[in-house]
Image 1 (spheres, rainbow, N blue to C red):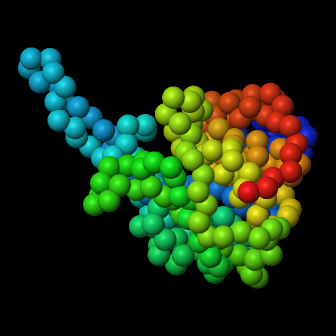
Image 2 (image 1 turned 30 degrees about the vertical axis):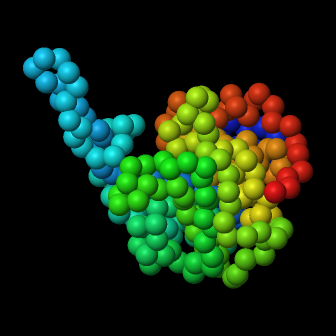
Image 3 (image 1 turned 60 degrees about the vertical axis):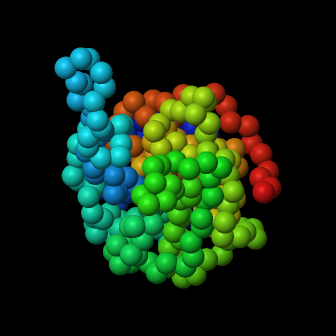
Length: 232
């Protein structure tokens, strides 16, 4: 497949990761697959007097109804484990399902502690996210780290290119810790993983099904992310 973007060691493919992954051989997978968000979008039924009615649907407002991501796809897990190291962002409810489906054993878990809660009480308002680390033969990180990372979320008043866009500081910290080698993000979104990789002078590949996000990521990379040395 011809790359959508290819420059300075960074490559973007516009396509389905199930089709593209078998053609690649990255050392590290870093990704936030959208499994587990297959609820219906929020809806409101206006009342007769024109006022906003009660909320219906699930907990999201950002995507149309779907069911493809209701459960973990074993084929996806097999393909992603073609890389010897995988860092997977996920919801706590999905850990046992993901762990059971992954060919690699889970080695550790990072807790991203956010500076605000990002959901309604259910029964507690979520203020963190998990990053599960799977690897074929143990983990040889680049630097010392702890299991809890306190990194602020992108402020509500700041423009976000993608609904699930990660803070660049978080991805810089993660890519500075994971083992060396080419990084691949099979659910690239707006390309923050690639931007962080470019800043750290790492080779990286992004795969994205929606072309609008490929375009956004390419523009972000073209703006020029200056190389840097990361320190927590």
